[in-house]
Structure formats: structure tokens, C-alpha cells
Image (tube, rainbow over all chains, first blue to last red; front, top):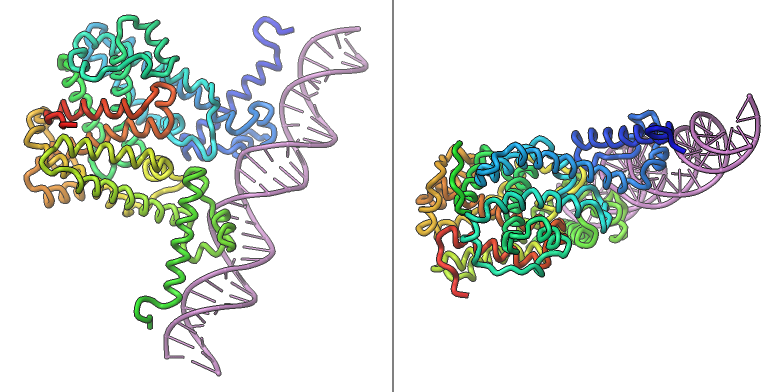
Length: 238
Length: 238
DNA sequence: GTAAAGATTGAACGCCGTGTAGAAATAGAT
DNA sequence: ATCTATTTCTACACGGCGTTCAATCTTTAC
């Protein structure tokens, strides 16, 4: 059986798998998600296209693997931003998260397109995929923000009555286990926060703000400050 | 020269052009924008793929034409919604617009993807395209809403100082000509309204809400009511 | 009626993802 | 060290794609 770490074969296999994904990401970064071509990857590696099929059953399988990696990158970025933010300043946390999200999206537009847009013609993500898990992980970061902001924000969010049955069971149980004190309305707020950042970012990434506004960052900042203000959070010091 | 209406050739040409676009739209509605294939269209029309090149120089050219049509469809829908809304109820107008936007998007998800997502691998829209004009047209509808809501909403939007130089010249002049009384902050608000609807809709259309929430419509309604409330507009009667 | 202009065909080129068959290389066990 | 089983890789074929081009048929214009 295997040695200390791994059998030699498994090590080479992992290396090659990584190289395939790395080259695929590189191609995607220049030509968009649609530029991921098994033949082009194999060509760059000095292989034949068919050889990749011993590492990934499909092109879709490779795309799925890349998606998981990209989700991981985004999650780590946002989690790191949350760790570095002051723990007693909800408005500052919110702003830091919003900025980290946009910074990642602007720095990795193609990765953003991969997970939030049409990844590639005809690609269908696996149903019980890791995408759902990754989205919940991203949602958890947001939920932590909402949790610390909820004492200030609850008053403005009581209008709509939400129940746990309004959410998918996986998200509902995840929230109730991790944040027992949060009501359903807080989860709804979390999703609406997400959508609010997502809206401006997709418009920017997909070029729809280019014809309207000189500096998308300014619009984003303005909307985030408006968001913090209407949530009843104190304006951050800086 | 031509007869009363058109020369026979021009008439046939217009018919064929329409048929090409119609079949392309049909394919897109079932298989997504990536399913638009010149060969498949030609096959369905009993033609050869090359024949399409006398109607559209490119596949991208066909995509551009479809985009223009889809923009037109969306613009007419939203403009009709605006006409049918009561003219003295800013909150009701806003809500009607938001609902009309979502209804269109949910009813035409592939058209939505065509204009707001990756239309197709490698497609690059023409720079001086009609897309810009169409977006301005959609923005005008929103600006009318903002104009009628501005007396109530101005107070909450004075925080950020915007200047006309923050916007692209075409949008700035369009606004100043059509709505001389509106300040730059109103245009910024208009774009932020757009992004707010767009955020939830893209998440829904691209399937990212499916794993989180039971009924995306409820989340959308809740956010729109929150939006109307924070804008300082009276809650609509219904 | 004849010549110009437009529409269409059919074949070709070079991409692509995807399979299959067999060769080459590597692993573990004797 | 040798043998055997598994894995990796090449070579090739298939069908589909967008695109081009010379040749052909059809409509228009004079």
C-alpha cells in the first residue's frame, strides 16, 4: 500500500491534476471561461487531449473542479477579511466585507464569471454539488456580520414576517445551529445584502456600468454607505 | 427601382432575416444563448450554413441583432408598465416597475442571460453599439420614476456628493436634457435602483437562490418594499 | 435580352469535445 | 529481477461548430 505520504503514482497524479487546473485557470483568466479547451491545455502540457480524460471524466468535470477551487479562493478571501476587521464595529465589518468582495471580483473577473455567470456552454453543475456547500460557507460569513449588526438593525427589519420554512432546509438548519439567536428575518437580510453587492458587481464585471458611470467604485461605496446607514449602524470612523 | 412598398427581393430578404432571428430565439429559449448555432438554424430552414452569411456577416452580428430585439422587448414591457401605473403614486410606480422587470426576467430567462450575462463564448459587443442606447432607454424609464419620487427621496440621498462628471457624457447630457431639475445624485440613485433589482434577479435567474430560499419572489418583494420605505415614499395602498 | 447584383450551394479548413484501441510506463507481489 | 495488473498516454476516428470561397442559380436593372 501507500508509503509515508502517498504512493509515487498518486503524487504524480496530483501534480498533473494541479497543472491541468492551473493552466485551465490561466486560459480562463485571459480568454474567459469559454476559453477552457481540453485540447489547448493538453497542447500546452505536451500531451494529447485524450490524456486528460484519465484525470477528469469530462470537460464539465474539470469545470466543476475549477469552480470548487474558485469558491475556495473567494471564501478564504472573505474569511480573512472578516478576521482582520475589528470585532466591535458592525459597520466597519460590513464595509470591509463589501470592499473585500468587490476587490476580489475586480481582480478576478473571469473567476467571478465562472461561478456567477454562465460557466461554459452546456455546462450543468452536479445537483448535489459542492457549489451549494460553498455558497452556504459564503453565506455564513455574511451571517456573522448580520449577527453582530442585528441588535442595531433588527428594528428596521421587522416589517416583513419570515419563517424558517421560507428557506431551504439546509440553510435553515445551518443558521439555527450556528446562530441560535438569529430570527429568519436576519437570514433574509443576509441574502438581500448579498444581492445588493452582487447587483452592482455583476453590472460592473459584465460591463454594463461602463457606459453609465465614470468610476464604478464610487457608486459601490455610495451604495454600501447608504446600506449601512439605513441598517441603523453607526457610520464607520474612516 | 422598388415598387410601392419594397422590391420583391427586399421583402424576401426581410422575411428570411426575421425567420433566422426567430429560429435563433427559439433555440436560445430552449438551450440557452450558447445553443445558437448557425448550422442548426440553417438546417431547420433547409438552407446551408454559408447562406446565413448573406444576412449576417458573423455569428456575433446575429447575436448583436438578437440583443437589440431583446432590449426592445424589455424596454417596451417596462415602458408599458410605466404607462399603466398611476402617475401620482411614486411608490406604486416603483413597485410596478420592479414587478414588471422581474416578471419579464422570469418569463424570459434566456433573453435575460443574453443581454446581462455572457451572451456566447468569445462574443464581443460592438463598441458604439445599440446596447448603450438601449441601456439609456431603460435608464430613462427609471429616471422618470426617480423624478417623480425625488421630492420625497431627496432628503435621504444628500449624503454623497455627486457631480455630472461622475457619469459618462452621454448619460449626463441625456439626463440634463430630459430632466433638467434632477441633480446628479438622482442619477446615481437611479443606477443603484437598477443594481438592486438586478442583483436579486441575476441570483435567481442563474440559480443561486434556488439552494437558499423557497420563494425568490417573496425575497424580491421584501427588498422592494424595504427600498421604497428607506426612500421615504409612502407605502402603496395595496 | 442582356448584364450586373444578390442569394445559395457544396466543399474545404481548422477548431472543438468525446470516445476507442493499443502501446508504453509504472505499480505491487513473487 | 521478473511477471502481471493497472494506469497513463498516443493515435485516430466521429460529429459538430464557424468561416471562407469558387461556382451556380435567381432576381433585378438597363
